[in-house]
Length: 393
Ligand code: FAD
Image (tube, helix red, strand yellow):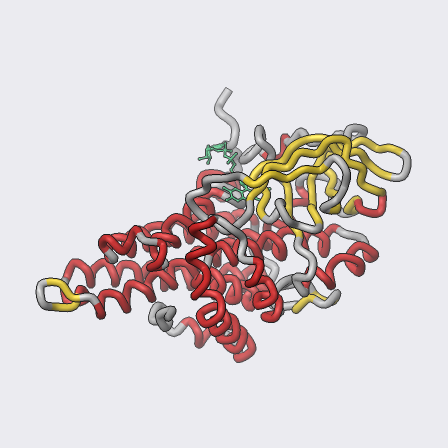
């Protein structure tokens, strides 16, 4: 049985509207009762839990902030709450939804034509079709704007050639949102590729130590034809991806919040139940100190995450704000989860007790959607006016 929530010490719940509180409880109940019991076995086998997709679909959270086209049209705060509640129980499920919803669907919503939105978004919102989002390449990770996949104009469409790496959901996604360099204009364009397009291949990356259920793939595109109607008209430069990343980075920041809360909840219960030296583990000062440090971190990241959402909603959030939120929150959650791993002793390295799984799952989150370093440099550039991404000449 998943532990009850003891991590909301400063009553963050009071800051939410009644609709947001109701959404929080709906997602929490489903995740704790229906999803938590089956996660460890999938995580250990590194298999995607397809049986969970209808449950997540019934929550009505895919498409998050998108309005219309069968999507929920949540405020960014509501979407953030739902993200954290999924991640509190399982980070892989949360990454699956984020890639599908806050990256792929949002790109179609923000950069797609009216026809594309009507054609693709409703079934994506119901999780009847699944999407992935491919920016990173084997040779271009942090330096993604230099990507080398090409898009060559031909009669009636485009020919895509190149490779992508790390793309979540790509081994089974029905639709692949892919970024490529237009060979005529030398600018980045976006395309929707169908799963069965000839010349397209996605192979699972094996042996990940975190987010093991998420199926990250290496994609190879050889002479893949994409019809004109599947080029996203709103992607005409690398900057256009930042419209999407501004929102998705806020969402990603809420994953570590949820993960840290789940770990605290587990530790709090464990320390009261397990005894050593004739007393519950919770009775030892060193253990209490770790627990309180974890709790303090969680109150801090919750409030920063919440403020980020409010700044976005009032139109004042900058890329630097989003990057600082993502990097700082993730690093604090990493510290928190690490303390939790210590508190569980030997059980802290067993996936069955949630904490070890969460500890491993935070590592890729520290790296994706901009590593800690890259997000730090985005904020650094904003506050100093000096970009320091390239080594000094
Ligand atoms: P590198 O860019 O090679 O960086 C290596 C190290 O060097 C890092 O510590 C980095 O911070 C540091 N570094 C690099 N450049 C600088 C610099 N200028 N200054 C200081 N330090 C620097 N991508 C997608 O497009 N779609 C996905 O769905 C997706 N899912 C992912 C899921 C997982 C589990 C993982 C691990 C990655 C995923 N990614 C995805 C890719 C992810 O965004 C990249 O891994 C990330 O951007 C880092 O790129 P890299 O791994 O090539 O590291």
